[in-house]
Length: 267
Image (cartoon, rainbow, N blue to C red):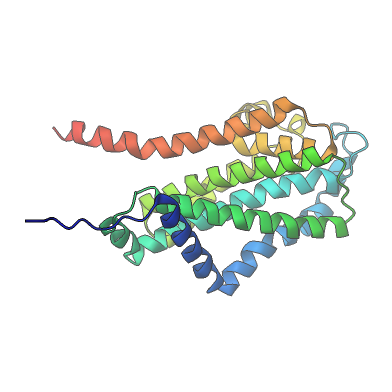
C-alpha cells in the first residue's frame, strides 16, 4: 500500500507566509499600529523637554546636547517597548487556537517565532525613521559616519530580534494577553531604566551600574549613542551584539532545557 506523504513547503516559504500574515494582522488593527509607531515619538518629545536639565549636570558628557544624548536611547527603548507586542501577539495566537493549527501542519516549531522576529524588525526600522524625523525637528544632529549609521542599524535590528524572542517566549508560556501585558511591563521597566538611556550611569547607585553591565539594552544604548555622536569603538558594537545575541540564545535554549528536565523529573 502506497503511503501519501504531505507536501512540505520550504522553510523560507513558511516564514515568508507567516511574516506576511503577521503584517496583515497588524494592519487590520490601525489603532495598535498607530500607537506602536507614534508612542516613541511622543516619549522623545516629552522626555527631551522634561529631563533636558540633566545636561547641566557635571557627569553629563561635555559638548553634547540632551536631544543628541536621548535620541539613540529612545531607539533602544522603543525596541524594548515594541517587544511586548510580540508577546501579546503570541498569547493571542494561543487564545485563538492558531498555535494548535500550526502544530498540526508540516511546519517547524520555530517558524512562528522567526516570522514574529522579522515582523518586529520591519516595524523597528519604520519606528527608527519616524523617530529620526521627530528628533531632527527638535534639533538633533547625527555626528557619525555612514559606517556608524550602518552599525547602528545592525545593533538595533539584533536587539529587536532578542526582544521579540524574549517577549514571544513570555507570550507562549503565559498565553493570556492581559497577563502578558503586566508581565511584559515588569520585564520591560528594568531593561529600560537600569541603563544610561535617560541619564549617565555615573549618576546612579553602584548596584544599578553593576546591573547595567548585564543589561543588553544598556550596551545597545551605549553603542547606538556612540555611533550617533561619532565616538563609538568597535568594542562598543561587538559588546552590544554579544549581549543581545547572548540573551537571544538563552531565550531559544530555555524551552529546550525545560522540555528535557520535565520528563526526567516525572520518573
